[in-house]
Image: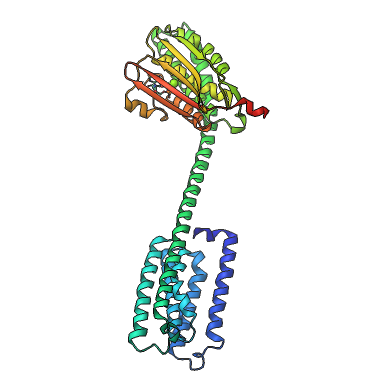
Length: 409
Ligand code: ADP
Ligand code: MG
């Protein structure tokens, strides 16, 4: 019941608690047959009422299990004392039926089941007491239809259980949802922070790299020193690559407008771009797109996705191998495939894909596929890798097909 902390809820809670206290005081002092003799039963009730009121009033400040249990126990004793001290007031029996409902307020399942069981036992004991201890005349309203009253009591407990079951389930789901939102907010904030830091790191890196490149060409340095400079530059290049990949992922959402994209055009430009990269190891890229493949996505993200996958395929390929890129429609999806006949992956390696910084390449960042997985998920697509060690890999990407004719209907 942590929500009591919320201001509006606190006010409502206190209004309800004061109303309950007013009813208790009213019950004790207005037309109470036990008030005149001021006997032990009245004093007992007075003490109970006072303690219960105090616990209820202090609860928002101390939301502990001890307070919860004390409130339930005190309220139960109070209700049972009402039933026993005022046998003429038939409606007191209804209060007994409601005792487990009190613990629903605290959304504590253990407390609820505990109250439900104890209340069941106490009611059994009470009916036994009335039946066998000659109390029937006092509780004539119960005695007239004992079975009916027992059944009503059982029915009320089942209804209360049902209410608890439904509300508790809903509360748990809501709590889970709330925790997920909090988690993603935290991730978003740390992502933005990390992006800011990454951005700040890039500038000094560029300066250091610039100087190293100058020193690398400076003949006053020995060959050994120059080799070290080259190594340093390589490492800085690597760091720059990680940072720029990271920054593209952390770009604000508004920069990523979704539009209708012709997959064929995008694939054409991506394969053209990677053509010379493939030629480094004599790998050619073959593109096969036949049908109209329109999807709804952001072009830059789609290109980023395809570049990463095709680059991986080229990097895995053996000298002179062909990389095949296809796109076709399959029911409601546009299916793109990037097929290579390179070194392939084991099942364990496939399972690790998309994990941040997972890379088997000496100069890999291990961020490419993580970004791809994020992009695909964002557009309700699917990505799947089928691979066989030393035989090659097929990466299959599915995006929901966007029917252009819908625009003109
Ligand atoms: P990087 O390319 O920087 O290593 P990626 O996230 O793009 O990072 O890929 C992670 C790893 O997955 C690669 O290092 C590689 O081992 C493996 N991988 C990805 N695509 C393929 C492929 N087509 N064939 C074989 N291995 C691949
Ligand atoms: Mg890669």
